[in-house]
Image (cartoon, rainbow, N blue to C red; front, top):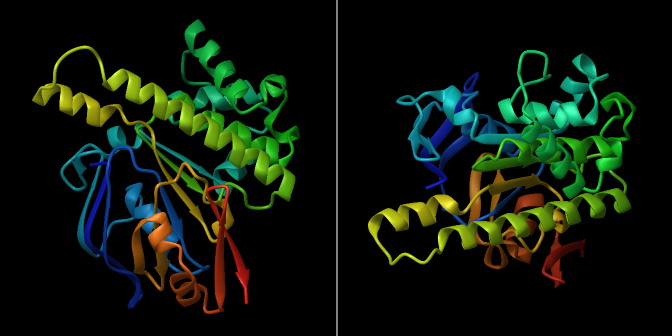
Length: 286
């Protein structure tokens, strides 16, 4: 199990932010987390990342139960991309090259000063930059890149550490339509490539056994959680969706059964209509 939340709640100053949430993410699934501003998405992510402790309930991530595991070890298997991460690099390591920012992902660090990197690491960093179409930026200072370019570099950094779970927290915030679609295309292509490699690696010539089943389950990597309040960003590669409102789960499951007119109207409190085109949902207010 990648993520297993059981009756999870979080309260702050007497106010319930997340309420009795149950959520299970299995290997091979990619989830979209949808909800309006103030729905509890950030608090939920902070609990999954282990930076915020639930008031009630149990959290397990990557098979490790929080409160009975090495949290630092778990975090090294989780990659996180957000606008706040970009701001941290911009403020403290803005002169680092795009290549160095990507390399820092191997150790889930901000900066590379205290770590050693092999020639293989250098090659992998360049390969990740190339995967997101920004190899030409490798030697440019991070601070000099456009917002869209910075987001691509941070996504390349996320894949650098070969994580089991990648959390993308509104990565398209602030991007124009062209930059957004370019970034989403890169995410989709790399996710599809990773899935194909995982399946090939998990289905060898040996016959089925309990050990092989465990290997097969672990091979579906990395799982993605994509957080947004723009449903048109939900790519075909995402298999499931959870709609959150006021800290409660309105609906969760396969995306086409969840991203419906009724559920999104309830979530955003305006009459919504969804049209599916090329595997993506497009929302209009009617």
